[in-house]
Length: 214
Image (cartoon, rainbow, N blue to C red; front, top):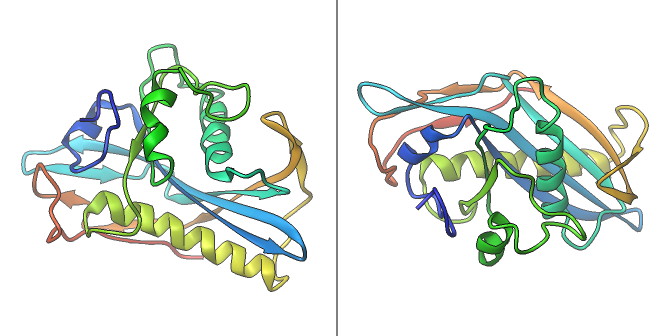
């Protein structure tokens, strides 16, 4: 069920009701005695077609949040930061419906979505946003492949940071957590091959290839 409750993702047909669907995954590593987390996320839309559904990535890029001095739950900070940033977009309105698909905190989704539990200390998930769960570790569903792709992009960024390859500008403070230093960047050239999902419920045999260029 995607409209309420836990919202585990087993298909794509219900995702078409949202104005945008974000897939996000966060990884964390201790680098030079400091905790660093990277969240990779993709903005997409799911549209119904005559033969099934189509995954559309308008931005054609993989977005990255890089957190230094990250808290115990960097995954939730990344989701909250994403929601706060999306609220600043010109096309966001009080009627917007945004899905954020993640593989973290499944047991807390009900309370977070119903605004009975803060997503991070002192902050509720903003109105208009809904967390959905998809595992990056099991299954071959198209939705899960998107999460796994984000997982790979986050891990790749962390590996590059550990090797000292990248800086990409200064770190800055963020309103969502004053103890964390942050930078935003993106990798362009995201391409979705065979975006048609030819069934209503995505099964392990569905072929959807997701990859990005750097």
